[in-house]
Length: 453
Image 1 (cartoon, rainbow, N blue to C red):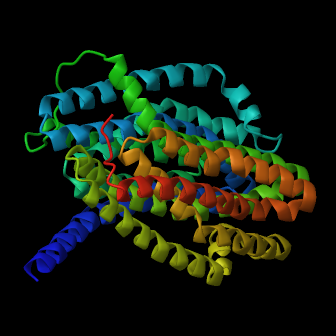
Image 2: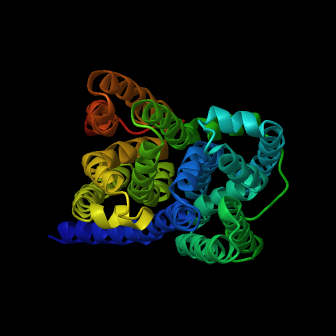
């Protein structure tokens, strides 16, 4: 009996620890999602639907910026958590310092080549005669601020590993509130249009970056900046762990690009407006799933570093249960309130576009019942340094399967195929994810421990 009580108390403590990290992670992802959504709302209301479509066309480049950050931040967070679990603070600090230095250098490279090829990038992303100048205006400013995007997001991920998950939501909230206020001032009051929205987002990222840097420069932080040498084996290890999350974010941009191309072919520019709305809603749902997964990852990696496999799998089960609940809630809310959601972005003057957008959103929302499981299983494998499994799932759901589904279904069903392709691809990927997961769990049940590479 005492053993049963002890086990229940242990699970209760683990649940508390999980939610301690989960709530700030999800909140941070929600607030992070608001950056793009708020830009879309203000640009739509202050400039017009075509300008909103231009912001959506620019999104793949923004995804690329965050993917660059994730390539290093997720891997660094996992490695740092493992070192902290092993009690090696010196290696944790050196990994942290090398990560920030590397991402800073990369941001200058991106800025140089981005500004040099601005129009080529805009045209490649699918800018039309009606959207080209808007896309260029938005991209130019985002490229100039890209360093603050990359470093800020890296610090936001690592601050949770440092043991201060509440600071994650605080820093991102400050940035989001600033973004909303500046959007209102620049776009609505000063009539700066699309550039105003870009400046608002960039300045907000500066505020977020400064907030997190202040924390890591204070003594109460476990992690501090220290002297280090660039160690390519560590960078390689970091990138291999972060690659799945990087692919997830980068693929999101590629998928938006592919969808925009198909929509322009089968529907026209009004279809891009509809897809922009779907993208904003999908981003919020997807980031919720990513937030749940990131809430699990630092604790999972920590216990993995301690070689406590039982706790690692118990955490994973908790995260899956949370995903199941959130998936159903997301689907129900979007399905019921689709007209209200669409009305935030476009008016009812064009009832054909309005009703079409509602119908497309409801079809797309069915995929919300599945997507979270794929994100969570991939994140779980990343947390225990199984980058190949994580990458297979991320590449499958984020690029390969969705691209194949999009091309096949549009060829078969035309415009309708665009809106059902995500559901089909996520379903196929879930079958693959569960197959990989069952094999890993079977090894664990046969008492084959998870090994630290």
